[in-house]
Image 1 (tube, rainbow, N blue to C red):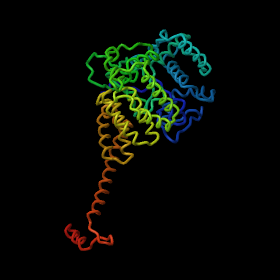
Image 2: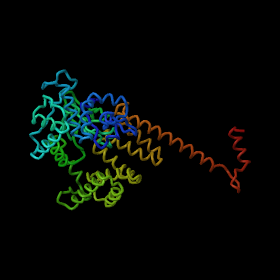
Image 3: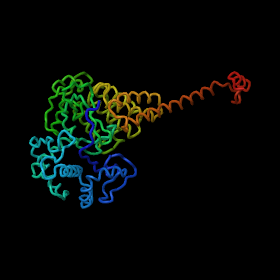
Image 4: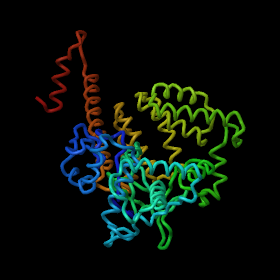
Length: 449
């Protein structure tokens, strides 16, 4: 069920994707058209360029003066100020009724919860930002503290734009005002999915009238201590949701060693696990896929942890990614199959994370020409994905195409196998040629002559 479906208040494409993806819809295309003004923004169509022009018009002048794309947060803040200027004018409240539940200056900043070094970093950023921003600051945020609050609010409430298969979550950043009202829970009852740059909040379970809608701000499969550390470092709160306060038993299971004992940070096994994950993350960041593949296989061969251990699950995720990048399909199949079981246990049998993984696993089966198995997993994936993604979404359309592709390949293989069997069943003489007498009898029996 859709709870919210919104286009972004403001969004920006990550700097590293400029020239590779459309600055408006973020779609990746081989041929993009460059803005004739700044020559720094690229679009996939005239429609996208026209849609972007409302806010890019003023930005274009600044980029032309800058002669290069500034960092992501500078672009992001600049676009928000352009919207504030348009909506607030010379006032401190919007000049017209908005179609959102709140306006941008009502976002929580939690600036006072930042430690001194974080506050200092924001101040340094604003000093640099003024070199890019060539216009007067809108009255609604005039004053250093108001600007600091706005930047802190942006950092607290922005979403990372993901592709629809959630395999890439660094495409850009976006602000969704209504979705920013949703609080966090490590046991959420709703889940965000992207359809292009639109963010849709979907129910994970039946939500009673009056029940608060909550999403997860972090990876819920992590143990409580890691989730809390992440949430406090980014959002400045200590999570006290039921998943954290009642999570001791689940955490113990995620940290068990092969002997059934709970791992402790002081033990050599824990330290080895931390080293393992650190190495995998470094390889992934540097895209050193061959080294990552070899290292992952080495760690997997040691069988240091049981299947339910969180370090083992994370190692399998890294190994699965490395297998895809290096086309090591046997590694993909072994780790991918294990992850299906783990995700079902961690997230539930109808969670989009499981659905997307099933789709990815099925793609590998199709690639190595196992269409019957691929079709089975594609259909299982569709049973989940169809609950969360709109009929016009790219991922859902692509999945239907893959199901048909698997079916057609299976038919080709079956026809080929039948033909081969027919040849084997046909009697031949010593010279390898069909025995004519039997061949004529067969044709006559089949009514072909």
